[in-house]
Image 1 (cartoon, one colour):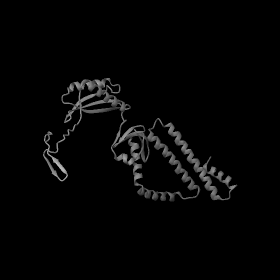
Image 2 (image 1 turned 45 degrees about the vertical axis):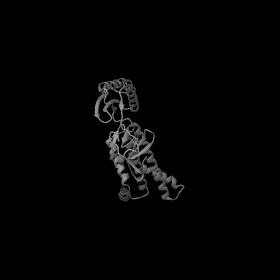
Image 3 (image 1 turned 135 degrees about the vertical axis):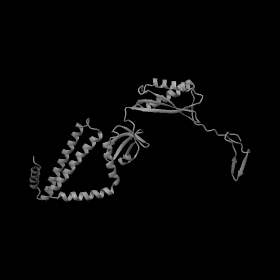
Image 4 (image 1 turned 180 degrees about the vertical axis):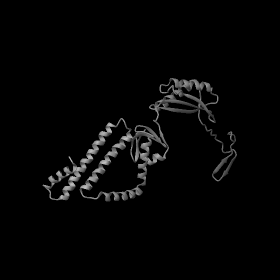
Length: 295
């Protein structure tokens, strides 16, 4: 049925009980606008389900929202036309209002523009684990103004898109395989070949550590704590905590069995008797102590 015929039919039926032409025109226009919005909402729901597997969650979201807002705009213009309002004048006024609102809400506009960049660039997807500076969590949704995260301690976090564009972003689950670098120190008396063999054996027997890429052992540095060594292991991205916990437990147990000493930074503090080389100034007592701890 032609929309004009439908409106005319609605007007004729309402006129029979209400003499006000303005009220009749307004009611009929609102009913038709409601019908337009419902049709567009139904269309965006059906299209979203059909394209769910073909489009990413971000693109699906943008498509559905675009269809929905298009329906609302068409409904508004239809109401204005039905009421005899000049839409060209409204468009000009909307442009002026848009400029004013743009200056008043620069942060919101910046976040909206940043949202389009995030959606087009696709640095992460819904369900990815990401790190933004010191904040880590799983992406719940990517909207035009913000990104919603669920942190690993089950907190809800909303981050403006403008902040994400400016921050250092790490997508932790971008690739299927990740690397775990374990850095620690052993005593200088340690047989490094023995330590290497023990670590390689631990990696070979651990169920979470992958054989390809192969584990890597390297000597990193010599410092005041001892010999710094690094063990690099590859694992499936879905087993971060399991891999790290099991490997560290295996290292502690095997090093104890092989008598390999893990070292750490130590601070030796000596207590000097007050009667030796003291100089009292008021209530302050100073003691002269050599670097080797002798007085």
